[in-house]
Image 1 (tube, each protein chain N blue to C red):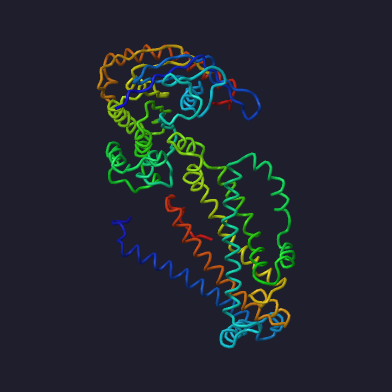
Image 2 (cartoon, each protein chain N blue to C red):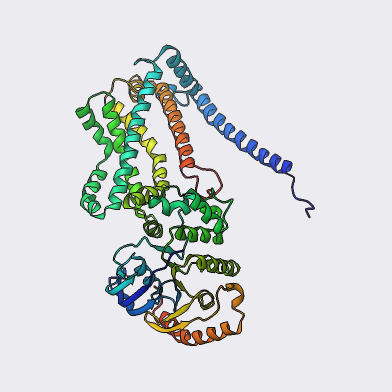
Amino acid sequence: MVEEFLSEAAIKKNRNKHRVKVHSLQLGLAVLLLGGWQILADHKILDPFFYGRPSGVMHQLGVWITNGTSIGSLWVNAWVTFYEATYGFLAGVILGIIFGVFLARNPTAAEIFAPYIKVSNSIPRVVLGSIFVLWLGLGSVSKVALAFVLVFFPVFFNAFQGTREADHKLIANARLLGASKRQITIKVIFPSALSWITASMHVSFGFALIGAIVGEFLGAQRGLGLLIATAQGNFNPNGVYAAMLIIAIMALSAEWLITKLENRLLNWRPTQISGTEL
Amino acid sequence: MNSGSPVSFDNVSKRFRTPKGTWYQALAGLEFEIKAGEFVSLVGPTGCGKSTALTLLAGLEQPSIGAVNVDGREVDKIETSTGFVFQHDATFPWMSVYNNIAAGPKFRGVKNYDQLVRTWISKVGLTGFESNYPHQLSGGMKKRVALAQALINEPSLLLMDEPFSALDVQTRSIMTDELVSIWETTGSTVVFVTHDLEEAIALSDRVLVLTAGPAKVKADFTINLPRPRKARDIRFTEEFLEIYQDIWSVLRDEVDIAYQRQLVAPGKGK
């Protein structure tokens, strides 16, 4: 039998206890995996020549940061990949939204374009990287183009679907309140499609990074993709992992920014189901 | 205070294509007239075409045969002098209470709407909730937003499609009362669709009983209860009960017909 409600302090204490437990287990898991890898590599059970080792990755990062890489400063290369991905991402998102909303609002245009969109969507887009390198050269433009085509389609399809699923009652209401077709698109359709669009943006930045890096694999003068390709050519697994680590940090920061933006844009939504976001 | 629009249905039929490709006839030769400034309720069994009549009046759909006239003109497009309160929530979830109510004036390019919006916010009792989003409001409060959103444009014709059907009984009787007192200050014509005969009688000047679909007018009752009315209390008076029995004796047969049909053809709703 419980006589009293828990005090605020007790609730807080319980919550903190839970948090400490989760965080220490997370840390423990990381130590176990990385430590295991290190020990197995040190005892030659995992051949460090092929598999690398955590200490080697950290050493490689240290060398890159202090002495630069074989293709120039680490920061310059990271920056190049980042802006290629970002430009491709922004262009893909903006054009994806415009085309998606436009086609969903104009059924005849959608009918006309449908087979073309289906065909271009069925092309494995990474293959286009080779064509872009041929057309646009070894510079950044070909990477931006590849990142763009990878981002465009998911955003386009989500914007299209989100627009089509906009509540007809709301549109009818807006029309009766005196909204023009343009006002309906901007004030009613776009906000209701926004949760679809931001959902696609989460996966899309990852696609943009893939586009930039694969583009750099295929032929480039700078960038993390080239750094990975060079490390691979030199049988330097630690270099590949080190570049991967930087890319992961980049992707996570972008994801964090997108989540911030999403929460800001969609602050009118009821609080989401509680629990860990993945 | 505006004058309100007269309304007439001239031999109106409406059919829809069902998803199966067959035709569904919602209205067949519907005819009635409403005088300017009248509050008229349409009652009838489920699926009889009441809501269809409203969408034709609003210009959201066009009749297949016949004509719907508002203010002496045939309705062939959306009339922005018409206000509509929907059965289900049609407030914009991404707009605050203030912006929802200001939506009409903003869409219409009205300048200096702030004072007007604040007046309506206080009229429907939402002062202090201006910056809340709809999901933070109760069902009754959302209805107040919808009501203010429609009425702020001073419609000469107000259409309401079972606006209070989703509310609990207590909130519903409060809202009915408030609707009466707000409407008595506007003078607009109201067409009110409902299942609830009590609500219809308490609110209206006239109650039209429609047949099981396709809808026709089966009977036309004038409600001679005094105004201004207290909708919440009037339903316990002797006259009210008499009117209720009169109308119910007509409506009951149609309700039975509609119900029998549902039993014969399961799943074929409206």
